[in-house]
Length: 109
Image (cartoon, rainbow, N blue to C red; front, top):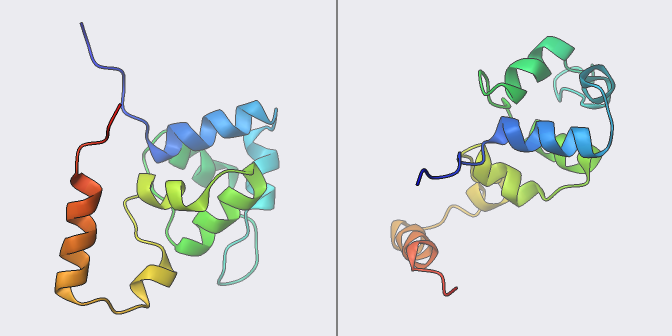
């Protein structure tokens, strides 16, 4: 029996977009880059949805979450990033280790 494919950032974005019945072009036009407030290109979004690229910033992750009405923390997890607000806390090595240890504890079913 094979394992289901893991959820990826790109697949999650694509599924959320499709649930809202949006085209890639529509979604791309609503995701604005932080540097210049210009929308991302549909090609860039296509690359993200096909897991060829990851979002380049927390700002883009927040934009995807807002437009698609999905959880930004889960998107950060899927993108392999810690949210900026957590990184800014300048946590000690012990605090980070304790948090990851708690995260790794088996979940009760």
